Image 1 (cartoon, rainbow, N blue to C red):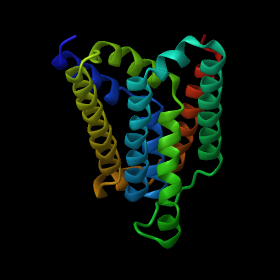
Image 2 (tube, rainbow, N blue to C red):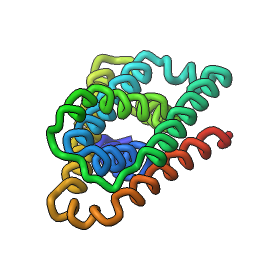
Image 3 (tube, helix red, strand yellow):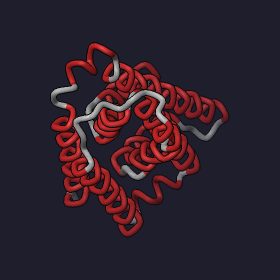
Length: 203
């Protein structure tokens, strides 16, 4: 598969709405721009996990081991449901104040949320395993191509999800969201629960 085709495929995968998008959206609306950006950085950091096990061949072994794959799948599903339920019941009509003390202390926690959301997603794991099987070859050039593509995916995730956080916390967007903030947070919560439930029941 040509690198250009892989680059376009990666872009489509990243911008396709999913659990990562909903989580960044929810955190941005609920806690402000910085919260969304740190969530986005956590998501992009998780890509290093997928790159590492794909290059080492561990991802393929896990994907072929039903028990291990099921464990990862249910852990990911449970975490999404937890985030969704929490987001639904802790939604608020009050817009976050940028840079408040409480938010500053939660930034690492928000990054960890993003990291776990992406790292525990078995769909992401299967995507990277399938893509890296096309990129990696036994020679040194193949390893360089895999690392190059991995770096591209990290940067792509960071740019896209930071952009989502910035757009949805812009002054014009904030003024529009003020009346529907709580309802939108609840919708994001329901969406995360739905993603988790579908992940759990899907074979």
